Length: 112
Length: 116
Image 1 (cartoon, chains in turn red, orange):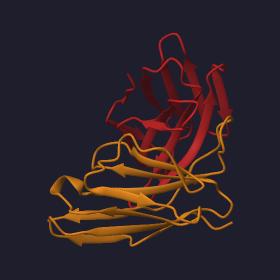
Image 2 (tube, chains in turn brown, red):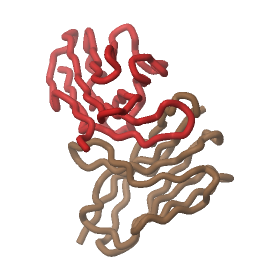
Image 3 (cartoon, one colour):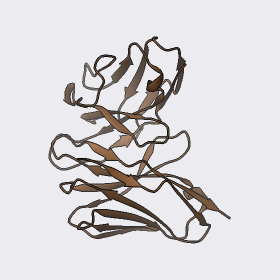
């Protein structure tokens, strides 16, 4: 079945690194995504990784993929207060429909 | 380029009433999606259109929800009659996907619905 799980809450000090974790179940997923949602706003795509990669870096963001364990993580270096938001992991569940399956989201709180 | 537009941004109705939401996708995007995001959960796909045809509506409660995209551009999502559990944010997204290689989905700001 299709299921994406995330921890609900993460609190970090400004300037530290944040690591948000995600596990998924569909081994046929071709792409895995990280979206950011600020209060009252829609979803903003942060980054994505193709399933044949195990790491992708984009400025302060590093995505690690362990396909064997179906585990995805997002590391934010030098976390800032503006990074406070809900972060959603999503898998592209089906090649034909392009459907995204989202996790429950991790609320990141950055304190000074 | 302009993003995905949605209206209204907020709507409060009583149960058993009807409501409609509108979405204008990014210009040229063939594929349009409607998601439902209940408080504390991730978005769930309700329906996906490619141009004006339905690709996936497997999770749309068809006894009360309907959606259309008549000219392959704008789309409306309707709920009739609404239930308390329909209280959620309804997100519209669009992409240039036409099958095959994945394309990025761009999301609108959403319509927040409260059913009393």
